[in-house]
Image (cartoon, rainbow, N blue to C red; front, side):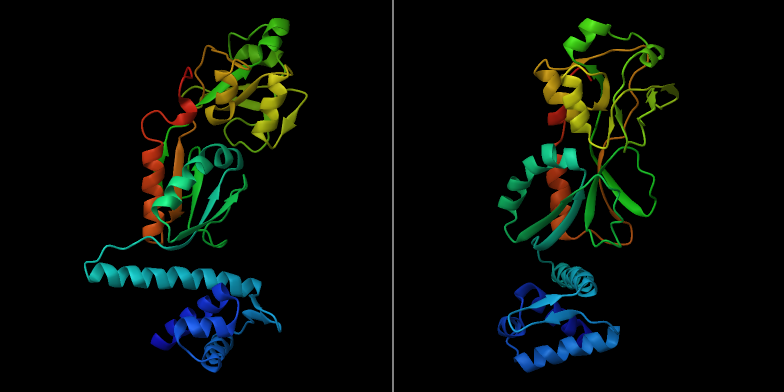
Length: 307
């Protein structure tokens, strides 16, 4: 096992340095010995881990996955040794995070600089995507997820509330009036978000526990909440979107929140999630604490809104 761990360390350094010679210099090891360690790993695993050219070595797809796993294992070993020696573990290394596109660009990105300024040995690799990623198999350390969590294989920490509003532009309300009840939504042009599991494009759910539903229709559906908000601002129809998407437009008077006879459904909040089988690293714990602190109390996206 010690030799295997050493080979993992050597391989991870080759991937980060981009060459055998650079890895050898960093580890005070000959290039020949570096090559032997990598070759031993490839024989043990039965796959090619690196592509070699005269200019540079790059990981194969299998090599990239293995390098990410190796980095995590080595970091956990370093943390365990530091904790056993009663030392403070300093966050370091690459932290891979998946975050929803709109929320990630609007809210998560705002707090990233302060985190990196405080933890200058951490490198963030963030994937902004509304696709529900498989954290473990795709090599992410953690993800930011919004809504009600169903995946029992994940550990979660709730970071902040997330509210949802029905809104329309003043111009739309002037032409068509504002609905006063959930039932009246059927008479309006409702712009549908196709990726939501709570407010589906053709069925909007209300009541704190989602026990009231109404069929809606409209002439625009989209996989982007931001695109729907722009259409709503132009007076096309109603949107039923989270406050982090419609908040700025409401504060600027471009959209007007509409109160109905049933409250909006509770989305469940903003969460940090990670595999239940993995102990959070120092860099991950620091990120989760940073987000919880930045979004404590009334989060930025809910401020000055009727939620």
